[in-house]
Amino acid sequence: RAAPVVLGIESSCDETGAGLVRDGRLLGHAVASSMDEHARFGGVVPEIAARAHVHALRPVVRRALGEAGLRMADIGAVAVTTGPGLSGALQVGLAGAKGLAYALGVPLYGVHHLAGHVAADTLAHGPLPNPCVVLIVSGGHTSLLLVRDLARDRIVHLGDTLDDAAGECFDKVARVFGLPYPGGPAIDRAARVGDPRAVPFPRPLTGPRDDPYGFSFSGLKTAAARWAERHQGRALPVADGAAALQEAVADVLTRKAVAACTAHGVGTLVVVGGVAANSRVRALAEERCAAAGIALRVPPLKLCTDNGAMIAAIGDLLVRAGAEPAPLDVSIDPSAPL
Ligand code: KG4
Ligand code: ZN
Image (cartoon, rainbow, N blue to C red; front, top):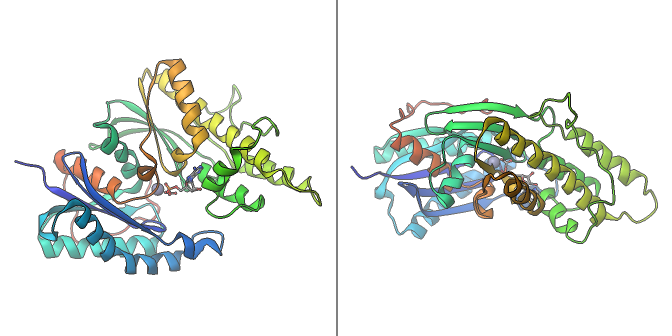
């Protein structure tokens, strides 16, 4: 039997996404963002995000269908993010997904946002090799996983951040440096003309006695703030600070990810999440994987940040693996564990 068209709906934070995937292939997707509405607050305001999803959900589903040249009746299954994320925001997506699944008489799948980030890569590069090591780096997560089979939930959790996520570190330091929100892309841009050796920022948790797969970024944030304070009254060399911070983050992330591959005898590293869009993270991962004989997979930029295609992609994998659909009374799980 032919695989169904899976509609994926994402609404865990400030992006409303809809994507359509069949049999591992992306047919169409659309994203709306409320980022501009949050900018003057310096971070995502949950109530504003939830309201924006209410307005954006139907239009993004229609745009995705339009791009794919499909009609509502062609949808054969609906997948939706149930967590982790902001509760009000998640509620909007789940309510919409339930309504659609019920009206169309198709199965509903509640999916984990991070599994979606991992699945995004399959849309660009085909099925994931089993096993592979996955580095998830976003505004809310920094995790290293040993993935044996994504669709069957055979995932070994190797390590996490003890405090801030890597993206959160970029976002907070950008604020201190006077760069616009969201900070990650702003730091990336500023760093282009900076000297990464200008400031000797620490490389947290890289000592011989430290957890090899643990991360910590709050110390880096403090170090960056101290460095900025020392320039009181003088112009801050933002490009140098940004380049040095980016170098420290990219160094720690890629060093540990490659070490995880080597220690577990795994030949493929997959880097996903918003911070996978960072130019230095991508370049250093490429360099170090090549040196270690490891194949590197990083999704294209538009599939790295939150979107509906990645949710459709994990939904499609679940459908094809014969996973059990969710009941129509399934709830959100805002702090869903990995
Ligand atoms: O995956 P994502 O879109 O949302 C979450 O699930 O968190 O990731 C957003 C994070 C933000 O912290 C943002 O600053 C960061 O990804 N980010 C970047 C870049 N693009 C986005 N960080 C560094 N460099 C970038 N180019
Ligand atoms: Zn995300």
